[in-house]
Image (cartoon, rainbow, N blue to C red; front, side, top):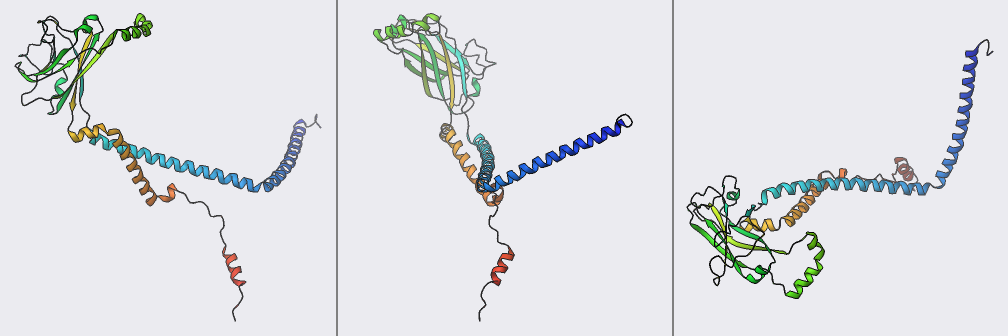
Length: 322
């Protein structure tokens, strides 16, 4: 048959193998399915418990996603409100270059064109004029880095003065502040040097101190301020040109002082942001629970549902009244 009809023999062999494989698969699946059904019937309560726990976890994840979305919306609403409520004070930092050729070293910080002052600094690219355009008080912070040299330690007190100048060079506002290096006794200084000998030798730190002088209450009047002048003054006991400290570098930071109400909001901006976020979240949650409660809290399926047949049969079985 294979010689006379090879294709027919091949088709019959293929059909026979498929039938045998299908019969073996059906018998195997039938045996396994019966065993699985028996095992499921034995552990039916456990499977119901696992399905209930899984369904509960799925609902918890769903509710958490909804609540997280409401929280993100509350944060966005709070951010938009804080943009309108909070006013950030202007802060500008400028480097100070003191002129030590004069008896009182002076550094100028120009704001607008000031030809009458004669500071010799280009005023075109200065941004300090923005902070003085408001009629707010200004806080000036002068930072100076002084080496802990024997000269500076023996110098003691000296004076730093900040002045607002008009375009013609006249002084509008002037305030000064005394300062000196922080005192360290000889034994303490020797111990600190021993503890920091490795970074000192490696050059990671230096024997210096940074003094920060905060001068508050500066405000421009009706005449616009054209330039700021920072001056280092010596004590009265020194001759002109003496009693001036040695400096590494110096800088001036100007910060506008907001009105009282705005200053309170700026100081408590983080707390106000948190409270607005919480209130927005609670309001959104209340609206969602009132309007869209089935979306947030889906109702579980009722377990015991009484059918009409049961009710009718129970009614028929009631004893008739005579």
